[in-house]
Image 1 (cartoon, rainbow, N blue to C red):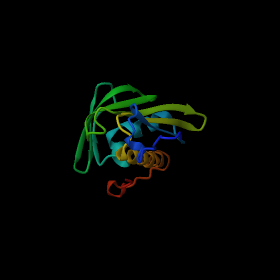
Image 2: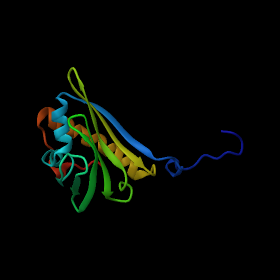
Image 3: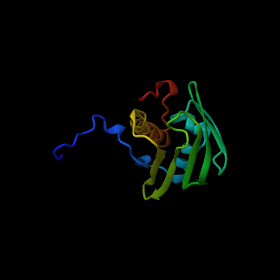
Length: 159
């Protein structure tokens, strides 16, 4: 640091451009199986949501239920089995307007999953917890697809 400069006490208070949460992982299964697990309500409810409604097609509205939270999103990109992306229309303040989704690439041994949750306006505690939680949920997605292992919703507490 130069003389006279001060270091901010909390770097999350810095004004930064929109931030993204990015995670990559490998799943030992075909892209179509990963796509279905990441997009069909009956599968989402086995690794992420308590309950969900929706149809994996462009323009379709989804409802994602987490206990008392009832969030709405719309599919803004969908091409089975390569990609699906949602935009949150109604959620908490930090998530509303953000976009999340999956890009799936076939590999010799399964699927490369490229997950993104884009458009965060603030690097705050919620952003940091969400990044951590997504990593944990993606681990559950992988375990569901590869081993048909399900963790009950009540036991999915990471934050």
